[in-house]
Amino acid sequence: MSTPHSTATHDAAAGSHADHPLVGHLVPISTLVATASALLVLTFITVAVRYIDIGEFNVWVAIGIAVVKASLVASFFMHLRWDRPFNLLVFVGCTAFVVLMMAFCVLDTSQYRATQYTGNPPLAQETLDAKAPAAPVARFKTGLDP
Image 1 (cartoon, helix red, strand yellow):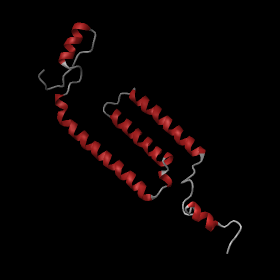
Image 2 (spheres, rainbow, N blue to C red; image 1 turned 90 degrees about the horizontal axis):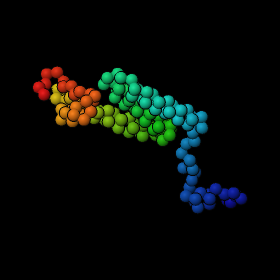
Image 3 (tube, rainbow, N blue to C red; image 1 turned 90 degrees about the vertical axis):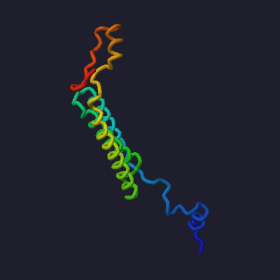
Image 4 (cartoon, rainbow, N blue to C red; image 1 turned 60 degrees about the vertical axis):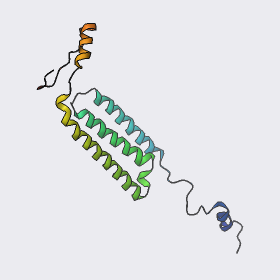
């Protein structure tokens, strides 16, 4: 049976595009603009947090914002939100392993905290004292003999 616009011959010649759309997923422009705006706002917040001294939590806040930004990019710009659930599982699993690796690295740094300087190393401070007397003075952590 032949029709004037037979799709059987067209599909056979084109490699059967009936099962596979030409585009994976079309995202509305408003969604992309909202996501880009959120990324810009989060970038400004990251820069602002750099100028606010909250101690060691500066790093954690910056990493938290970076995780949110990476999730936005993966979800909307890389279309993970509309993809197969297995790909989301891989993304979440990889993120969990990265967080676990970072946690182990942070646990390891506390062992060497007593031997760290809070200011300039002594040799650098001697050079600074000789050439720039107004430079900040190195301070040792308590309990150390210089």
